[in-house]
Length: 254
Image (cartoon, rainbow, N blue to C red; front, side, top):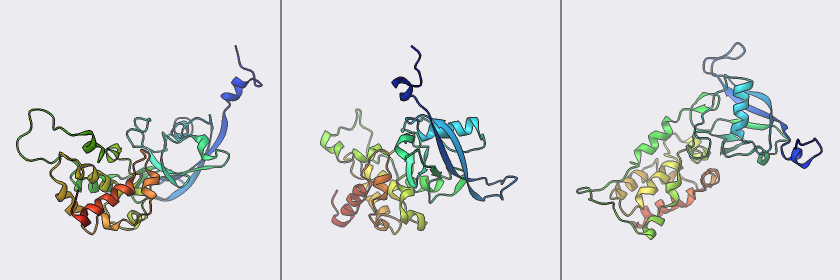
């Protein structure tokens, strides 16, 4: 049966016009803009309330302006590649529904803060990954490899389970006001990455990592603003993890 304009079925799939305002930057410049100049550009798309911000960006790129640049991959909140500032908050475009953003008003989209912008919504992630590499994010053991898996109790696993959820999206780090202004601070994600191994009963490099995080660029830069916890799309208690690392440094106990 074909739904009519008055039928409930038609209401359920009714589209709406949404204005998307994007902070853009082209390093090569355009006919109207200088190289590297930032400017806001507005687009209007037809969308369903249940569409995601990523869907709206796809419509803009595919139907209106193919030069728009942004990252995305899995589109299911697993890869973390489409983190951006949406209405002044760090979010994943693939997990943010238009209906949750008050689509009656313009939706503002910017690149995440604190990292160099390469073009439009794409930032240079290398400083972020460099901090992550510094904390040695891999299992460190001594002796010969076991013939079977290294056993661990459910209680031991639970100790660090929360921080294994990280998808490296950088939403926590680039929501941190200290990271925005301090070029040395590792940032929340690097500390979360270290936490995942520091409290792993199978790992033997805990104190090496704690020594790194005890440096002036480490955990003591954290001002407990809780921005990182609020920004995490995986619900990781980032501030709690940072405080547990601080406690280990203070007490000498893991």
